[in-house]
Image (cartoon, rainbow, N blue to C red; front, top):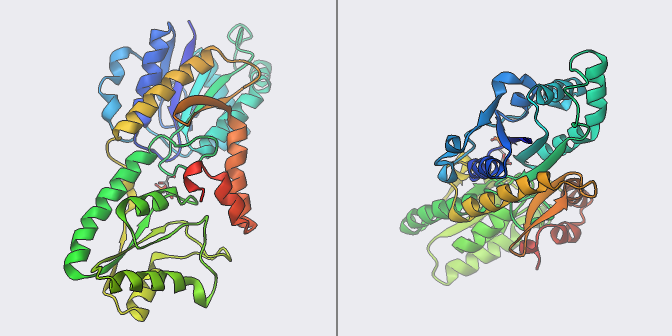
Length: 368
Ligand code: F6P
């Protein structure tokens, strides 16, 4: 029987538990054994205590659960070859042939590195007597597949990541709440949203809540004195039309075109000092990441979890590590490292101040 490990890694996102459920149940349905690897790469490095065989009923009810019920962590040891050697030994000791990782680009890159080192890691383990040749039989390759779990929606080659729509819905709900009190007091609110270096959550929540102005990293405002000009003019125009409230959404990674941060505090200062508005800041924080997944994320995690198992069972050398994506509403597979490289090229374009390229490399939601 093939033994498939499932792990969640990096920052959690709503729908990760649903993805684990889908992988466990599909694996069992397809005649395999499923193993949960607890707390991301920690479980892999620790071995026995961090790896548990999962049965069908173990994941009952997980479809609607928030976060990840098998835990997640950012593990420093796995970044070192010695950590990956321990991880390889633990996989062999547990007889695991394939690994499905649900996480962001960092976690998936780690997994691909692990896969690429695989035969070498085994040789070293055999040479140092840590595992027997017999235990490594039929395990010359490590098959992996990635699922992208992240609220940030910052991965290239997929239209959306597991968790992004849940987070977006939560942000919109919070902005709606803020709207009512802003309206009562005729106040301005600057709302900082997550997304790391990606402006998707800010852009989409701004659109969905009719924000007056949105700051995102991919379309920066001008550096220097002028950075707030467009925002000031827009806010005044809206106020002149009789709007009592002002809502500005600032992505946590917002910058100006000289790559200097544009922060909620800077925006508040302009609204209070220059426009004389009574202005408050709300940093939404981790309410954006916790809580149950929306229907879309439950569906996405289920379809992609199913496909990830199919991908490792039909692994071909042409696509050594696929990442399961969704494009134009179809579940697809892309070579993991291509998606990671393309994701990295957005950051590179931003660093080079080539914002048009950054926008065009983001998923289609960003394009003008
Ligand atoms: O990547 C997900 C994310 O929530 C980002 O949006 C945010 O910048 C970061 O993780 C926060 O990380 P932490 O939970 O470690 O503070």
